Amino acid sequence: MGLLSILKKLKEKEKEVRLLMLGLDNAGKTTILKKFNGEDINEIAPTLGFNIKTLDHRGFKLNIWDVGGQKSLRSYWRNYFESTDGLIWVVDSADKRRLEDCKNELHSLLGEERLLGATLLVFANKQDLPGALKMEEIAQVLELDKIKMHHWQIVNCSAVTGENLLKGIDWLLDDISKRIFTLD
Ligand code: G3D
Ligand code: MG
Image 1 (cartoon, rainbow, N blue to C red):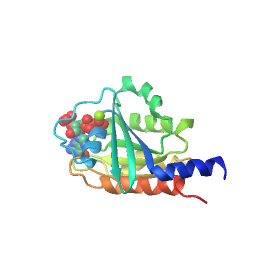
Image 2 (image 1 turned 180 degrees about the horizontal axis):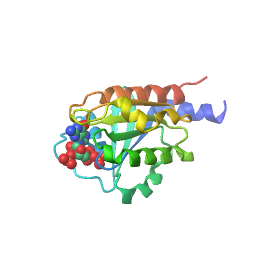
Image 3 (image 1 turned 180 degrees about the vertical axis):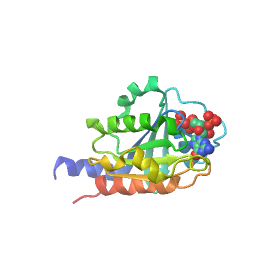
Image 4 (image 1 turned 45 degrees about the vertical axis):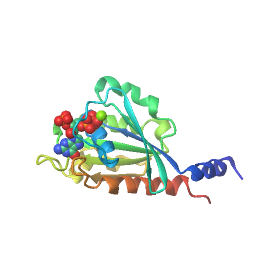
């Protein structure tokens, strides 16, 4: 048995998945994490460092890293890249002014060698807000069609209503498990 197969087998036993949640500050990352975990979302402070949550879902052990997205903190993102199976990129769909910034940060992240193996889920969040851009428009501005080195999907959602959070996470887990928990 090759080393890769052994590593896959070990991972399979634990079914442990490491997800890294990034995006500009105020996109709704912490709210998504709390809502997904069934916690109260009424008192959420800006994330100055990171939150890590371990939760069980569909027989997987998810380790979700939620890292602060303020400009001054973005240079620390790289400290969290190692062993990332899935990247969740959260977008504030109503923040049109910063979409260009959002696109640039995403594409520079995708150029990172240590993230090459990661599946990408883009959450077009805050769809409950009247001014929110549609998922298709977000995909276009973020130039998602240029992404060739990662499996990716965009899902419209709202962390406040909870709409589509499960749909996004489940797509991500399906894609990841096809890649890392399958022995051939
Ligand atoms: P971050 O972790 O990405 O920095 P937060 O973002 O989770 O701290 O959320 C930032 C603000 O956006 C919070 O509002 C939060 O309630 C709000 N928010 C997050 N997701 C949604 C959503 O889907 N819809 C709406 N309408 N608001 C959302 P405050 O007012 O506390 O700053
Ligand atoms: Mg936060």
